[in-house]
Image (tube, rainbow, N blue to C red; front, side, top):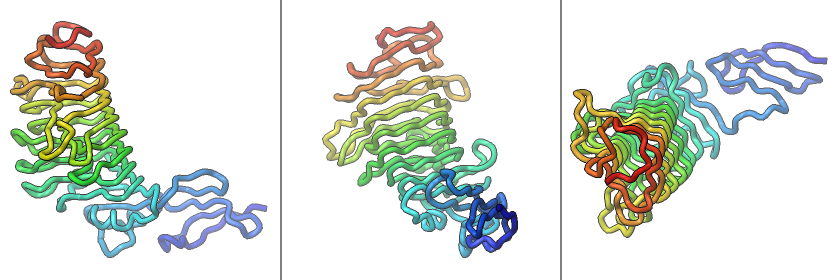
Length: 319
């Protein structure tokens, strides 16, 4: 027979509902702030759930919103399961030194409306970098401020993470006149999906590092706007052997708009002309009269397929 009762949660110390049969636990139903329901025999996410609130307390456990910690740095230090930990972040602005997401297979999920969770450090401080594999960011506003080198860096000079997923985020760099909102340092199997990339000099900069170059990059359904110089750009790392290239870039179904006053970026929309670069530019929309070469610089192995300008849809290479 099954029995329904209440017990003290070993994780949070609060009462929760449980179902038992012959003394064995069949299911537990925690308070909504304490995590997800667990049913024996039903697959559930690996790892643990953690909670972050700007009004939290770093002396707490972080295992429920009622015991949330207050900084990303503290929350990440608690995520030690090895694989599959999730961090749920309540709306608010989080001003810390650069946040290093160095926990593999971690998910960081912003709650509330798009952009309600803001990573907004002090002037001159970069917002976040990812240095571990298989990290997922969802529904965050990641924003460098004015004189920062970037808002979000995926990888750095020494790390080239694999399998990173960034979805539904607002990516910024404080209206910087020349620096990028996003830098890619030689990562692979990377997806940027449904993000708003704006208010910077450059949208995405492919930089590489001394160990290699970005490869297998998927930028899908993003909105680029208010970028004063370029939307996609390349940068050759000093001393590197990659020539600043990006390989197997898939840039598909993105919208490329102008600045707020209607003017176009001062450089090209897309700079992908470094030797050895390859990929596909397909079904994107550009707020420009035509696919004139003055606005697009692409290498021979970058394939241009049915992109849209004011002149219409064209698969003709920029010329």
